[in-house]
Structures are given as C-alpha cells and as structure tokens.
Length: 219
Image (cartoon, rainbow, N blue to C red; front, side, top):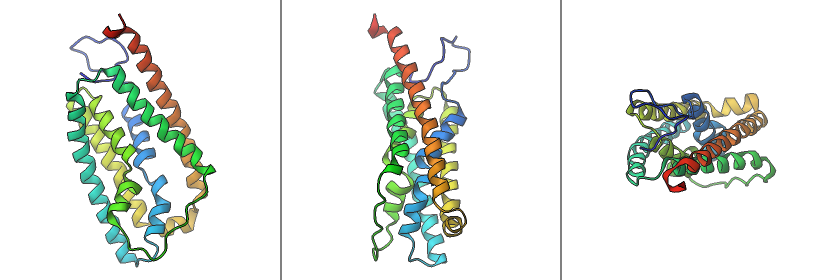
C-alpha cells in the first residue's frame, strides 16, 4: 500500500504519517489558497459589478470544489492501482511540493504581467489555473494515493474543500481586501509560507531516499 511511514508498525497500529493534517492544510493553502489567486481574480473581474462578481465567485468555487472531489478520489485510486513503491511516490510528491514552493519564493523577482483589458470573464480560466492550478491537483492526487486509511482520504478532501471556501470568501470580498491591505503583505506572507513548504518538501524527499535504501530493490 502507498503510505508515508515514520517507522515499522504492527498491523494493529494506526499508520503514522510524516505529514500531519496541519501540514496538509499548509500545503493546500499555499498551492490552492487565496494568496496566489487574489491578484489575478481581482484583475479578471475588475469590470464587473458587485453582483456579477459574487456570481462569478460562486461559479468558480463550485467548479473548483467538484474538480477537487473528482480528481482526489478518482486520481488517487488510479495512482494506487499502478502499485508505485511508497518511497517513489513520496519522492515524487516532495519534488512537486519543492518546485511549487521555489516558484512562489522566486515569483517576487519576476515582472508583473500586464492585465488584458476588455476581455470577457472566463469562469474556466479563473477556476483553472487561477484558483486550482495543475500542480495543486497533482499534489491532491499524490496525498490521497499516499493515504492508507479511508478516514485520512476524507480528511484530505475536506481540507482541500475548506481551503477553497477560504478562496470563495476572498473572492467575494476581494475589492475591500485589496483596498484595506494591498498586495505587498500578501506577497510577503506568500514568500514566508513558500519557505516553509521548501522545508517540508525537502523533509519528504530526504525521508523517501532513506526509505529507498531499505526497500527490496536496494538488496
């Protein structure tokens, strides 16, 4: 079975995961949370009335939530059926988390892309990739595939949907939020959380490499 083991456990014991549920929330908050999407969403809905903005926000949330539930359950099960060794699966997850974290940390050095004026609002674009990027879906699938118990899978899916609820709240109040705090504090917070994710990703990869030494292929 694909899971994250801290140590060898007896069958009667509960599996011990390297990533706690709090860590999972942090990863989802960084990957599919509002920090990365608040600017693009505000720019994409700048020409809408308050009523239209709320309608768009609810549609984006609905599309994203359905996608999370489908991708998490179906994608995770498919990945498990490939019988990928747990250390390889864990290493792949750590690599995805690391690349995303480095992207966030280095994003402040890239010039901002100019907003396209006069273009109609696209629900699909605001859902993918603004709110729910491909790497967020990949992270969700990997975390589900590495889970040994059904309740763990349910918690992971629930945390992902909870983060999307935070996205919804930010989308509904995006204009007063940006007027009140601006984007600079959000960029600073994103850089700090990105560094935390770098550390978590490296810990995952180091643990996977350590497990790989004792896996049957190493003998």
